[in-house]
Image 1 (cartoon, one colour):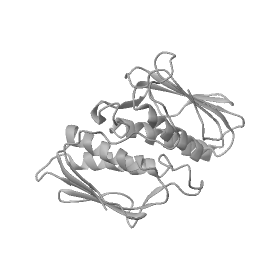
Image 2 (image 1 turned 180 degrees about the vertical axis):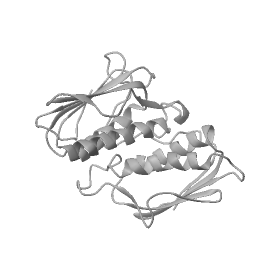
Image 3 (image 1 turned 30 degrees about the horizontal axis):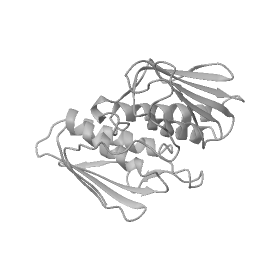
Length: 250
């Protein structure tokens, strides 16, 4: 399936929901400079880690079922004109490919001719994919969600149950979500290429105080699916790491 909207050809083929191995192939028309490659590697790692943390769930896969596990180190095998990254297990909502292609565009503004995400088999994904759509909210949340954003400056508060353990691990998962926002994974295509970030204000990320994790963010043009991804991460955290009482996004 070709997906329009990027300055390169973006293709998703095969079943990317099954948990079988997968591969990302990136064809370039010019050598990639070391700094750009470092940003690309970081961005792809953040995208895959967000899958590992449940962010690429939605109405297709439960957040606790999502996987995007890179096989071996994050650094790609490659030649002067082609890079490949193998996934040991790929079980994502197909719409999360839009976030992957956003990250590639952020790292390499020019010089990419094709990005090709291959799941198992050769058929087109059953789920249609568009650039302006990321995976939606998992429909069966087991915590209270209050999403009342009114502007670009946002406060997010995750409240865990009193006495919950593993809160540091839980906050690490929340930080993965924010790290992906720093490389335009959630960029709205209607904003300029200089915008489209989720940027922490004040401190560099989430702060844990007792049983509450808080972050202040400037949203410079992210898709609604960015906030759904946060709620999906929290759902996975609630099920697998530490019980969550509520999430407020204000």
